[in-house]
Length: 358
Image (tube, rainbow, N blue to C red):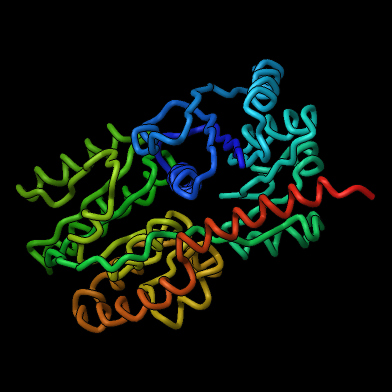
């Protein structure tokens, strides 16, 4: 079938990585894939079989881009439209309505933002949630019933040997105002204390965003104070698995936590809003359907971060064994091939139902 994927941003982030993997693997399975999205570094990761069309979606340009999408859909004989992120979803729904093509939307973040427009909720045939928690909460509020489907973020589950470097911590996120607040806490309050206890400690930060220069300045000041490379800001990296593989501990939630856990690296589930603690097989069952976020946890603070990292380094072999157990569970629950097959089945089901005459 011919599949049109639409996303507003295509540079750095969980949704962007998800769409890139989806496009490439749909193409591998023999489908014709057209990806319409913003310019960004993910484009270099697309396989040659994926047709990429750059666009800059804005609220003011909706009429113009809807007409362009209508022309593209009719010209390429698109069978199904799959949209990601708020503005892409709205444009897709309008173009799908005009061309009588069904639209599937994936909600990567908050439902009330991604599906903010009433037309998006009305014209979407199916809504894929990567978090079962957000699926359940959103359904109680908006009552969309069978429109909602849970298909989690998935990763390649091939075994990767973990050759970690002692006392190296890795953190990955967008470097924006929200995430900079957490990193300031780490750099200003946590790392100086931990450095006294673990002299070879390193924090490696991967990511890009508007606050990157400010983050680099904070890191440089800390490194100058200790005359060492305590905090290393790497910026954007097209592939992060090698960095996770070299780390003793990875900090993060969502796709970061999933990818690191899938290769057997211990993970501290934490972001600017939630301090979920070190990942264990027991905690895994509670947070795996919430996109690896402990939604009941308190915000991080200096004490909680510091004591948790100390607990990890003081009993590292214990946590490494927990990480080994998690690999087996992730292979079972988050297979990339399974996600692609379930998504294709959803496409086929939606198309089939649209062709059945009453």
